[in-house]
Length: 166
Image (cartoon, rainbow, N blue to C red; front, side, top):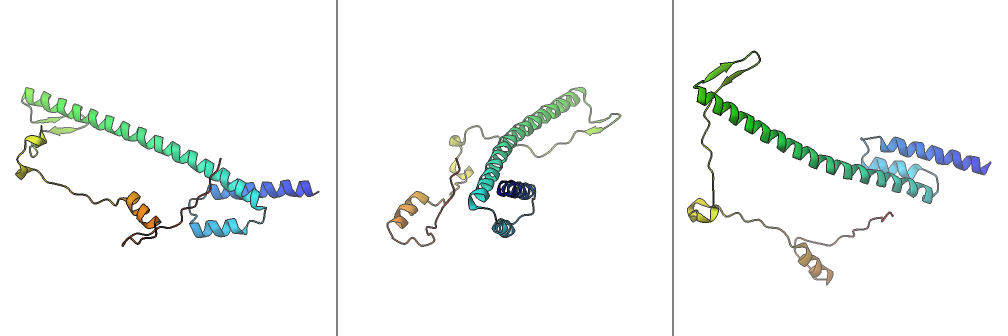
């Protein structure tokens, strides 16, 4: 009977975790309260959480790859449109046509402000070059100083504990 009760409990927990995984409206507080309310053993609860985290990591990796592919596809389409637009401009200029009406579109030529092309920035006079300075904290240096017990104004160390799941 205990085995049946345990399998029922594991099934219930799996259902709860499946429901949690499919919700997008969980803020950290609600998630913590929900997990705290589960009465199963810590090992079972953490096993389910680790499984959930593994699935999330796989989703994250998939999304990263998908974003990269979509960015490449966007760049390709943008470059194709630029080439097609250049073709239309050249064709209409060669034919001396300023406006063209087709069954689906009205195409007209329009001159925009000229583009500035810098071939070699090192040949430009300093008057035409902006110097951009960025300030980036040297976290390694700050960490070493704080780790010795010295104070660094504007920085502090805080615990960084994470569960390692293998």
